[in-house]
Length: 201
Image 1 (spheres, helix red, strand yellow):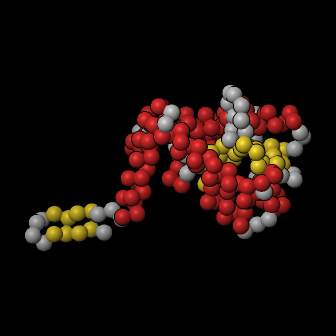
Image 2 (cartoon, helix red, strand yellow; image 1 turned 90 degrees about the horizontal axis):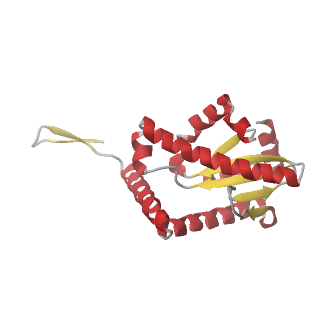
């Protein structure tokens, strides 16, 4: 809303409280991960907490026996989900760059954000190729992103598909979703229908 003070010849543009709080929260978490993560304290703790929450949600959606946390050295995604018709490799990204990089979207900032998305795709590719060897089911990759990160993955995905980047990594495609979107989809269809749609896509 625009508020005009009758005593002064000025008009003030006031952002909605929701947008203000969301922006502030995003900035705070960006700094926590930027500084805390480097020291192996706050950022690591938050990252582990978020992964634990996602693991619980995935177990609720797919079943406890079907979800495995991927451990080990080197590049790898976070979770492996075994379904009747396919394997799902899931990487969780809660942050893809500094707040200023995502807010200003300068060419240098976009390059940093895309580098993070590429790194997540590399992690998925490593795990996809690992589980391809173990069984002959189709293995597809999902990257779960936070709600405020949904804007930039789509252009990256389009570019990666058109330039052959995914093919070079040994991936058919990588699907970017928020956890809420995945929960909504599975709440409105069966696992069989979910797999059928992924195959068709």
